[in-house]
Length: 156
Image (cartoon, rainbow, N blue to C red; front, side):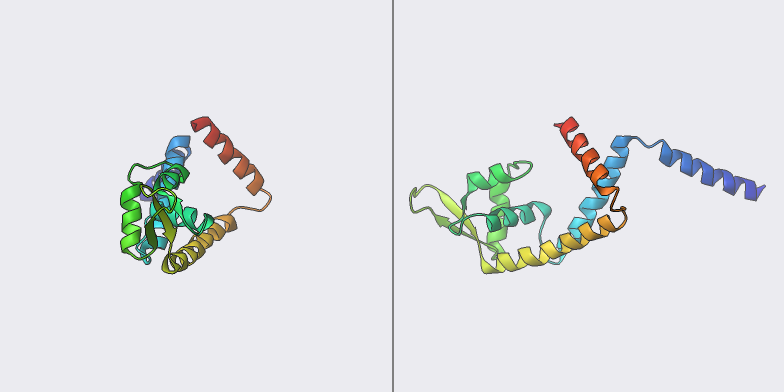
């Protein structure tokens, strides 16, 4: 009897995972992705949002960006951009200077330390990306990307 119960338990677990909704699957994947990214950034004392700010500044002009521009460039246009920028400044990753053209405007730029941290953290993200790609067959990747784009558009 015990053997039959074990087989039944395995079947019910399999059926339960098949019944998981698309939203539940996306939530589970999102949670695991965020955890992987958080673990990758732990050694640099960075959050995902702070990493995004470093990326934005790295792609920008040497004199930096106004805070308003950074906020607009963030994917979720977070209201705590000022706090995130200040944390990065205190870590020595950013400089804040008054604009030469408009003395009321603060411009934010990347320091060499911030640039180094960005490069190292980017390598960690690249490792995660390569790990994810390794479990998907190359011929399946275009279809997966197409499906993810369609899901993204449906949620907008």
